[in-house]
Image (tube, rainbow, N blue to C red):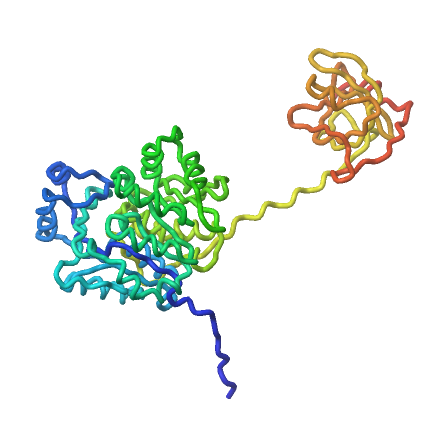
Length: 475
């Protein structure tokens, strides 16, 4: 019996590292009164103040509560691991408490295949996030607790994990906790990715200062249209449209050989990507409103899908398509949850069909019904003006014809010049043929490297097809 052939592939273990604020999401539906009571907004993400503390208990005691592993960075890493389906391809660092909620987070990471490398704070409870769902929008109120106590010493103790990673990612929220760890991570040889995450991170001076420190080492910058607009406003830029802001973000001072790439999502609108000063828009996957369950996790999911492509060395088209797919799955579920396996199939961009080479005809073959005329001619003489057109006699080895041209085309039709005329048509003027160069046609000097080349033309006199009178036949 023949031995089964062994198949080998390069290990992806530890290729992607996330560093952030691990939270247990306490998710439940609420009404408008809850939003007004706690001063929260749909689509917003804020840090909990004293007035928000009762909200966590309210959600937990209300029927329908769900506990889901959360935190922006952790969500993106979990989605990336799900998309990759490669054992231990991803790792995650953050601080949790030594409690039941911390155990739930560790179990969730293990179940999803993420290597959870948590710092344990025995004196502080695990961080939680109140996810208030109103219709299909939600508002996030974060109680960082243990997540707020992450220390750079933990990263130093696990430098082997950082050094092994090809890609390192943090949501901007981590700037509120341990900017020192982020500064250490962004200066490694790996690709460093950062998310703007929320407007307040740019509006609060200490957090903005941390962002400014990190920016020169950020290789991939993510954000949404609101965060991009906030950055521009705080920076004092006059630009207000997303493509222009993306260009300015991409052009901010950068260290190292890699040029920064900026990726701005826009909800149901195409994602704006700026690479080397050039803007490209990538489509998202549109869903009917009836399929939308929870839209707030779309940004984290998009980044997760994108990172799954980036860590494999895929191009921008693949990364954005993977991001769009991941987001489309997550918004159809409550919280950052997903089915057992993705069904993502990459669709390469459609290659443009090669242009058909034009078929050239001759003057002698033209008739009153000729359309789409491609012909190589030599300019013979100017024949006068007819209405808004100048008439020019051109010819080839089979005869001559009168061409009707616009004022702006006169400079091309120089006597003795060999021209390439494409997509012209015959226009009958009082029964006589005129070759019209309208807005759909093109006339240009002949050249060796263009269709038709640059032939030598001896014009045949005595066969002027524009001198022949035609009339419609009587049926």
